[in-house]
Structures are given as structure tokens and as C-alpha cells.
Image 1: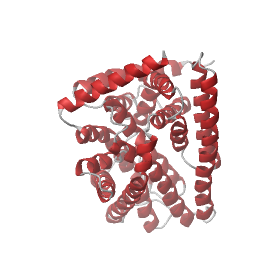
Image 2: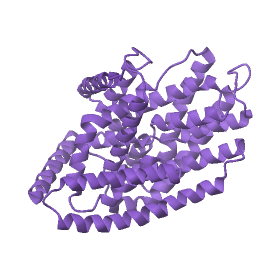
Image 3: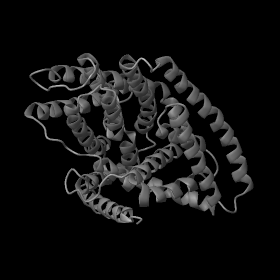
Image 4: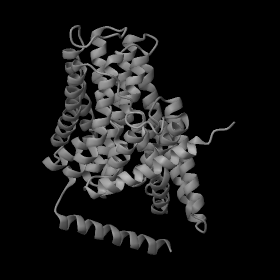
Length: 416
């Protein structure tokens, strides 16, 4: 008999995320925090009402793809070009500092008498792998928070987005290097060539699509709904190719697809349609799914202490590393702090990296609990810190809101 329990699961997720989002908004916190807390509460970590399933995983994956696609659509290309070099330096230092910090924390705790390891690989590689996990960044949480605050297109916002893309690539390289040491069948050179090939492919097909899409939208303006469908198809194809053929994260492909459509005709119309889809269905499921993945194991006092230290280092090393990179690129102190805080969240990316290391014998199962705690804390703390970092005078916020409303009215007039 066919099960329809997924319908109930969706209903519980949507109503719980909405209720807790309203509650967190009342406390002047980003609504995404409420969605994350909802996933924790209804998941196995607390009440166990909803369990993680393949269906929810797949829907949440579409959710994060749409989220990053929308971020690409809303990105100012000219501003992104200006922050290109800065983003590279921010990402590089923002990877190296957490890598070193994670290694030394693991070096102090991952030893006999502290935390007994049952991993097959040498201790040095295990400790390096903990550092690699801390290099991960889940920018989707930051994107949603910046969109909610209307700060996605700021100088710091563009630097965060650019750095996140490069961070993703550097993370793949770091993961590949350490896995190639543990598994001789993995070739670092081939992985690097695939990454370069992806960006060549994305640029080529993206420019072709940009020209074709612009001409097509100019010729057929009566039914603009078809433009939304074609744009989404392009996003999904690029995301699929990135992950399947080049080993690059699908969200990177989705973001690049959004960039290619950002300056086309009716891009504002497309953004509004995707925002509706994301807000109503996909985003709540994605953010709740992060909480559904959390299952806290039994932990000794040493593991609890390790969790506290590792979480603190995870937060501080991203703020210091990325903030230092931004400061070296002539960003103001406030902007540097905003960039650093924007890269704090590890999210599902760290869990994926950890699970790969677990399968390859690079990480002790005793350390999975602390990694989960790092993911949960950084994911919840990041949007709160981000709002504090972007806090400004009330008059400035109101002026920005009025400006945004005026621009929206002008866009509506142009389209009608």
C-alpha cells in the first residue's frame, strides 16, 4: 500500500517553520533562525515527529538550488567584478585559518587518554581532516539572511558571495588532497582540471544562453511565464552538469546560472516568481532539513569539552580569517566584520564532508557528535551575528526600505 505520510511531514514542516519564524522575528532575530530551530524540534534530536527521508532530502536540495539561483539573479555583476580579487583573498585566508585551527584542536584532543580514535587512517591525517571540515562554508544561510535584511547587494554582500564560490572550490581541492593521500586512486590533477573545465563550460554555455534568452524575451513579451520556466530549466541543467561531470557543488552551478540571467530582460519578474516559490515551499523545507539531520550521540566529558572548543574555533577562525582578508583588501572594519560573520555557517556542507571522511576512515565515529554540534551552533549563530554586524541607525534602515519600495514601484510601471 502506497504511503502518504510525506504529505503530513510537509504540512508539519511548513507550519512549524512559519510559527517559529514569526516568533524569532518578534525577538528581532532573522526568520531563518526559526526555520532552523523548527527542524531541530520536530526532528530526532528533540521530539522525533518528522524523520529525514530521501524525498525530503531531494526537495531540500532543490530548495538550496533555487535559493542560490535567486542570489545569482539579484547579484550586481559590476559590483561582483569589483570584489573579484578581494573575494579570492578572503576565501584563501578564510580556508587556511580554519584549517590550521581545526588541526591543532584535533591534535590536542584526538589522542589516547582524551578521545579514543577508531578510524583506520594515521592520526595526522585524521587531525588534518578535522581542519578540512572547518574550511567548509554554507553560504545559503547567509544569503537568506541578507535577502531578508535587504543587504544582499551591498559591497560586503557581494564579497561574501564571491568568496563563498571560491571557498567551495578551495574546499574541494583540500578534500581531494587529503583523500588522495588516504586513497591513491584519487588524482588531484584530474580534479583540478575538472574544476577549470567546469568554469570554461559554464562561461561558454552561459554567454550563449544569455544572448539567446535576451533575444527571445524581446521577441515574445506577451506571456512572460515561459521565461521563468526556461530560466529554471537552465539552472537545473547547469547544476546537474556541475555535480555530475565536474565534481563541483550543484549550488555553484545554480549561482552561476543566476548570474547569467541577472542582466537580461525581465530578470526582476523572474526574481519575484522564484521568491514566491522559495518562500512558500522550498526554503522552509531546506532549512528544516538541516535540523532533521541532527542526531546527538552519547558523549563523554572529553568529547563535550572538545565540542565546545571546536565550535569556538570554528566561529572565530572564519571571522578572523575572512575578516583579515577583507581588511587587507581595503574594506572598512565594519565591512570586514560583516564578511567574516557571513562565512561562519558550516551547514550541510560540513556534514557532507564529514560523512565522506567517515566512509574513507579519515574520521573517528566518536568525533561525529562534535561535528554535528559545530554545524548546529554555527548555522543558528551565523544569521544572528550577521544581523548584529549589519545593524545601523534606524533612519538608515527606513531610508533603504523606502528606496527599495520606490524602485519596486518603478519596475512594476515599466513592466505594465
